[in-house]
Amino acid sequence: MFTFQIYGDFSGYSDIAIGTSKLFGFNLMQNFNYPYFSRDIAEFWRRWHISLSTWFRDYLYIPLGGSKGGTWMKIRNTFVIFIVSGFWHGANWTFVFWGFLNALYFLPLLLTNKNRRNIDSIKKGSSSQSFKNTINIVKTFSLTVLAWVFFRSETLGQAFTIIKKIFSKSLFLIDKATEYEFIISIFFVVIFLFVEWFNREEEYALKSFLLKKKRIFRWSCYAVFFFLVIIFSGSKQGFIYFQF
Image: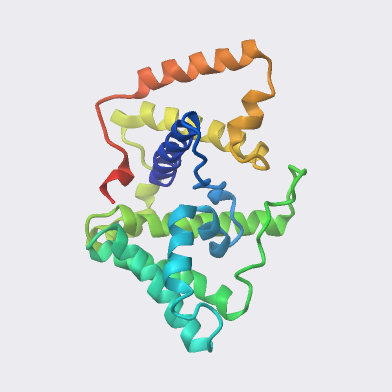
């Protein structure tokens, strides 16, 4: 659930910044491009936090030699950029390990020259996918979720405790006090995935889903969104990524 929370939080406030800038005549770059539909970890990092990823590429990875050097230089540069990315998020071993883990994910693709194989969106114009692509999406998503455990945890010990519980019976236990919130969250996540999947060819998912519909439908959706924000806003809480 944190995987979707941080995506909704960060991608959402990036969209707010992009939309606000458009009102003043400025066009900011797209910062997220359907990252959870990635088929490998290299594709994920081309689609997640694009502004930071491209900055690290242009001002750290390429000056260090990029992928033009020998094998050991490629490995060194990969670990440097991911570990520095971890430090950028905070001076905590959890962030360092998160960066290190993503470097490990990336390494096999780099060494086999497969890190640039998934550039375009998955089979544009087709909602059906091959079994291989489906497996790759699920695998990449699972690796990402595992890495987020370290990103979210306050200590490495806490992270390993959570991972230990994931592979135990406690994974299937739901706290009765939060059962309603859990069901509601799953419901909205499913809708969210549905909208993003079938509009993944657009720059933004709602662009196709809403703008091409009749005005009465659009404004009805706006009203629903408005009331959902009021109902589920809860106590005041800042954006997660404001701390970085």
